[in-house]
Length: 183
Length: 113
Image: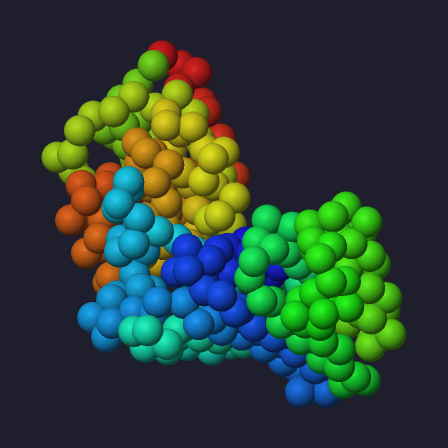
């Protein structure tokens, strides 16, 4: 995909479809290690060993309407095309974790893209899900935890436009502080 | 309008798979290596011209219902991709030329009929 944030959005929707209540999205970008690492971890219904073995095959999908699914295969390809690694682990009833790494200076590596908009759209459409978004760089780390926001906001839903716009700005400012999301 | 086998013959493309597959019409080419970009953009009468040669290309061909895939620059499909191409009756052709020259050749041939 043109931006890694689009891959993240796509993979996170797998978690949502798996009825996850909690989804952790972690991005680490390190210029010194020449590495970008992305992990999406959920507590959804998980997959059995048989499906897990096949899930990186685009001709296998949990959709019933068509026989191909490309979210995971394209994420894996993006990682491997840039000398990175891809792994997925899952347990029935416990959840799934998808990990991909990318060589930061590889010419075929897509930019991270607009991760702030990605998070805002995920939160907007899935207020009931507990999202924990972590982003780290060589110069720092920040965390956005929707449970903390709920605790502070009381009954105000996160899908309120004013709240969403605050979340978007909060992410942008924090990324700015740690020099993240630009590569 | 030409069908995919007529186009292959006229352009001198060779077959990796699908030599006996359905002769669907081709009216143009779509050139792109970013597979997620192809879905929803390539039309169902477009030959996909790409240097990508993994199994995801075959999945895109199925998903976007493409009449054929043309691998440019003499690129060969990897083993798994070829397996899936055969299994799904996808016409996969080979062109020795780069993507641009391959597309120009297709254009010239389609224009002449």
